[in-house]
Length: 69
Image 1: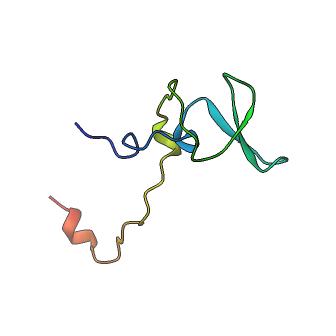
Image 2: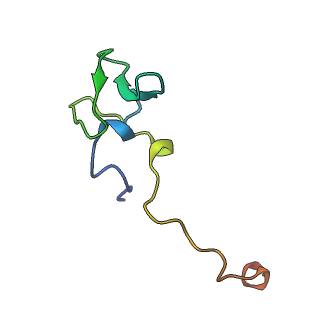
């Protein structure tokens, strides 16, 4: 199964990276250094909660009747 976001292993999707608001940059928990959001490394660990789709779904085209059994 293909999981969106795993095909592009970058720091902004990694479980080891977090965004520091004071420095306005990503910091790696493993190396404890500043990193770029599009940086790649061999220890990439995908975090599904960091992935944000480019396009938000449009739920306005559905009605309550569409979801009834």
